[in-house]
Length: 137
Image (tube, rainbow, N blue to C red):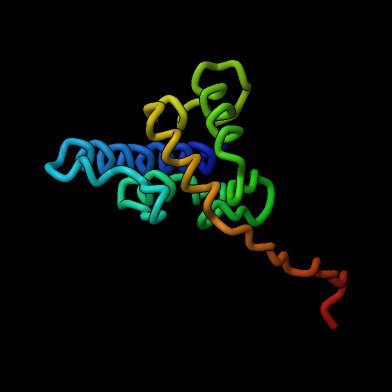
């Protein structure tokens, strides 16, 4: 395996640790009660935003993946929850999602499910493929 592969893995691990540390510090803060999403006024708390930010590396901002990864924006919340629990318990095979899901409590998975279900799907605009010339005249 290449050095770039290990650098990517190391970066993802450090990013995940930072997100986890921020989540834990918020959960144990005096304002832990604020770490709840309200369906009535659709308030998104910093805790949910922090959790969702770790998803953005692969799934895009607000769950709108550009290419290759699943689009989470507008996803059915019960489907999202079932898939994350399947990653967590190992019943759904994955490359990295089993690591991410094991770091989440069930209530955090539910919060993420609600968050992503409320996001609007934004069609991605992929650049047109370029045709390269063999000569550089």
